[in-house]
Image 1 (cartoon, rainbow, N blue to C red):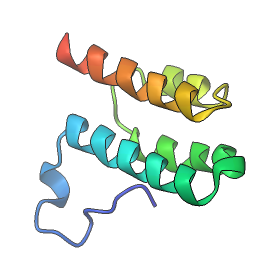
Image 2 (image 1 turned 90 degrees about the horizontal axis):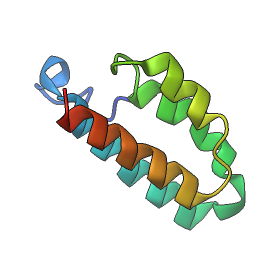
Image 3 (image 1 turned 60 degrees about the vertical axis):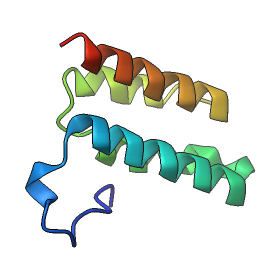
Length: 85
C-alpha cells in the first residue's frame, strides 16, 4: 500500500523524490489500465506521499484531481517543492 520497495533492503532509505517517482509510475500504469477510474489512485498517492512536507495540504489537493493531467501536475509541483527545501 504505497510502498513497493518494502521487500528491498532500502525500505528506510528511500528518498522523498524516489517515492514521488514510484507514485508517478504507478499513476501512469494505472491510467493505462483503468483510465476511467483514476479517482481510485487517490488513496495510493496519499500513501506514497505520507511524510512529505505539508502532506495534509497535498492530500487535499489529491482529492480535487479529476484527470491524469491534474495528478501529473500535482506530482510535478511536489517535485518542485522538494527541490527548494
